[in-house]
Length: 587
Image (tube, rainbow, N blue to C red; front, side):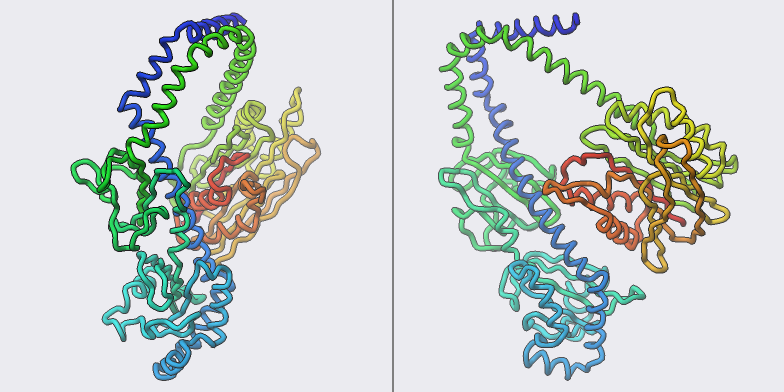
């Protein structure tokens, strides 16, 4: 109460000082007239605009790369393997005669490639396949060369072809594609048979016009300019008022000491005062792996809005003084109430976050098991919890526990702390089902009703190479088999903890082999929602697990890839619920 009165007095005094001090407007004018401050304010704007455009381009390229990667996966891969295999059976003379006649564009294989291209013909200008000799075996349009391999370009074949064959994939630089007739970026993927051996190469010609369109045009009266540069500083795209020759002209902006923007490796993002041939400009930039986005405005035009705002502030200062005096008392009570409410909420969230982080375990270095976990916090603190507990003194039996307490903030954080304490005693029960039964009885017998908790307990025996698990209303465990490259759900169902004293929890057992992967997660992952209202879902989750597991990544890299996939789906917005993932890989 005393804190509220003090805050109210401070607010009233602040309002009165503003209203009774016309010189305050003069200080604002002096502040904004400071050249250093103006440069910082406007420079931040230019830099942030450059970052925004760069983010658009990065997302576009990530989406295109993922789409092409999907073309070479799953059922499509089998069709592509068959097309290449059939082409490999033909001699050079047979294939060249077909290519010379119609570019191998009328075969059944070409028809399949055209069906992929029809998904977005404006983006994909050409798709073709080669066998391991480098000969074209199917294409959507006649290519400029029939032989892409070492026979025509010794000793390894064309650079893109050799890179895709050697590394599995290759993304090229922007260049003019003779056969497609457009400036493009080539995305090249190896085609692999069931034994993971490369049998052919697919080349997808992605039109750079789609990237150029992300730059957009100028608005009448707008003095800002945009440039998109390749890694060598040549302009790929610019605003409509700056017509240039693609890959012919270099950036117009030169930084102090004759430094060029695209060569500035000191910072990935930044701003500075530079020059063009005509005038001084305030430029911002954002640099990616293959691109640099530059935005710049004439220095005079950049300062004009702030100078106008300063003059406006001086003109209204007298009127503002009178109005502020009249509303000071009326606003005081309301502001105090809102500020105190927000402060209390902020403290509660901060406390809950500290409690949640404090419950998470440290990483373990275990021979024979690659173990990792991660919790992605939501915009409100949820009740996600996971832990690792040794079940024996020899440290050969490890319990992995993952749980989700219903609710948010303190209503979830406090039960999570209580649950963590109960777990220390439940470990003595020895088996997952018995541990869940003991936890359920403790929660149901609490004097004050606690939120229900979903939970999964899995005990991995490192000597016997098996896992024993039991679940209480928690999402299924995913078990990835490296031999079959499939991911199965390990089902075991019962009520969440704290719902029914009569609930029973049984154990299930599974043998493990080297390379097997277990994925534990909370429901915040499959239930993540993007800005359009679409749910991530279990199908996308399973595909994400398969992609990560088949890439021979470590457990923490698999988790990072899964979280990156869901972040991309929700367009990097804050998730509405916590997302926790634990990965255990037998090594």
